[in-house]
Image 1 (spheres, helix red, strand yellow):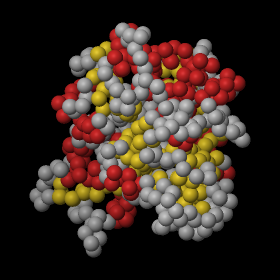
Image 2 (image 1 turned 45 degrees about the horizontal axis):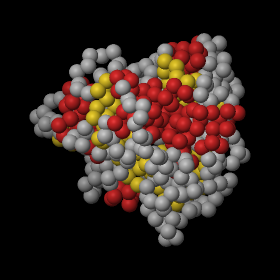
Image 3 (image 1 turned 180 degrees about the vertical axis):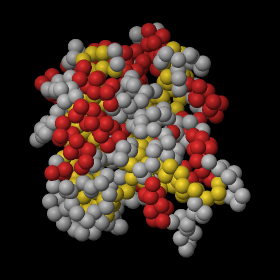
Image 4 (image 1 turned 90 degrees about the vertical axis):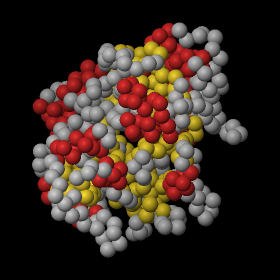
Length: 560
């Protein structure tokens, strides 16, 4: 592909320019570890040299399977500098899910924590392309074969020749697909930078070169952001990368479970200005804790939620703590980048007559860029003020498609009658008279639980694999902490007996923990429509009956 006018904007060139401009500024904090821009850049370069020496070629894919830690960021940057493509892997995956992502992505190398490596060992024989493994120490026993990460960096040859990088190089982000299996969204690096990672002051023009971005970094306010979202998801990853590419400081939450007191202890100690989180599941307990200790976090001035919006009740809690705290919901997705944001809607209660978005108790009106539109069935943009409901989509800087899946690419990235390609978000909405977009909800029955997307078909398949299960349907039910909880309605085979705990345990070895139904209702039969499809409206009405029951799994949205 010929180089474009944006060609200098490879992510590794951008980071290198910023690191050269502010080398002694703290870039990354994770637990007791603190890295300056210089040290983060140098360690990522060592990893790049090791990968090249190990035979990883330009454009090949290298997976990262780890919890939030400095090495996650180092690995990501080092893989890019080696001319390779990072692949994010969900640390909650069980063996089957892990096999799918590593095989589908054609990963040739893997960076993995010791505690997560045994699951890789289970599926390693099914991954003929995977030829190199780097092991990250995490305090657990080392049971898998591979090269120690620190030794690899220490022994990396200084004279290894690194390939040139380009804005045309790829960026790959794995996310849930409409079939329930993870899909890799493939971007050009320059497009993901413009669509999701570039931070600039209001009214400021886009940077024309990496050097111009670096010059701005020398003058920027040294903002500190606490990133609570996992780096293996878009929200956490994009917030962290966008901060690093403009010279600011990223503080990672590194605990394996979400503990509000520990989060706020970190925020207070590091003097963070902004907290990035995922919906009410994180925002509610944090606000409640702050109300018990109002002197905590004096420098915290803003909260940004991605993945799922904050409800009015939670926004009110935050304003009860500090009236002037800025609260913002960010709207976007792996297929569309960051499209827009909403602020201040808690004061007017939102717009009446709209449905709920992703489990929120009010719909939200988002201000979005000019490349975002609401499309009718013929892919024509609806005008402002139109009452028609349409699909929210983005044009211009959008992904190349889904990696290794041309059929899904054709569905999600169609071309209209004028030759424009669109990225369909999967959300429906209307265009307000002022040009903002009112989100009305998902166009499918996807469940959004604490920011994790769960596809009912996959959970239903696991349930129905149990010999005692005759039929099953999976729907969302409202949940105060999670936004939505995964709820199953199950009918048993004649004469069969089955306890909820037994069925959940059966699913737990087949699905990641966040996909396992938190509530199971046993019914005489699962209702279906006249054409044989599951009756999701009926199922949702049943699921809402007992939403106040104790959560059998526990409230932790970060637990594996």
